[in-house]
Length: 340
Ligand SMILES: [Zn+2]
Ligand SMILES: [Zn+2]
Image 1 (spheres, helix red, strand yellow):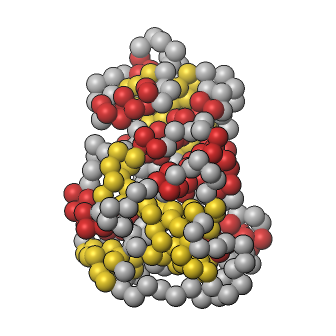
Image 2: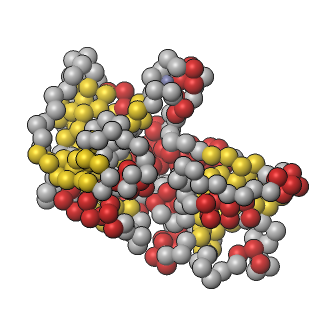
């Protein structure tokens, strides 16, 4: 099979490998689509520790090709999406139902071979059958949606709240739609890229901000005095600080974007006190795949149009080295000419 193998910082090559055989409890998946995530960029550029050589890619869906011993409820031909995050079930966080904090957490495509390949192995426990009506391409979006569902749980949006999303990438666009579903009375999304702002307006934002020119809180409009829930979905020190600046009294600020380890932002404790702000993080997707799939099946969450380009495995190294700031979501379809 062809697979995009990560050999070290800046080194990703499409390589021929034998198709892996499913062991006990495993499922062999013919990968239909695997999304390119910020984490893949971080791994490629050495900002996220892994142990190469490794097939990266953790946002994927495909068709069951074969199953190992003990897998009795899935069979070849079934369409499934993968939850890449594997918890141990026995450490203290796992016992406290914080599987996403598992001390022994590993992830397909980050610590173990993942989805930028024609085939991928996954434990049965990580496989979620796709509901009818959800395409394999949309299946590649289940993992990021599951992460956003967890974030929205923690953001605590109440009906009637004003909500600001900083960042209009795929994550920001999903969070914005979920904020609407939670009952936001006014939703604003900020991104310097015009096509992302246009996408947000199409998907239901009430207003958009170009942070390079607009001063949203100085307009005297709906946002004067700050926003009830601010969600940072970029992952930079500048925007995490901006999220605090935008918070209204009593607001929740959710830092969802992954900032590089070691980055710090100045926080004025007196401001947190005076405004009674809640600042919190949200990490991956504990037990949220089921709800993510239910949302996709319902048609209430648009993810298909967030996929602005499909690329081959061979195009992936250039994409990771150059970046793609004007795309919203790039998805690798590893099989030439396959329809997903
Ligand atoms: Zn991801
Ligand atoms: Zn654990």
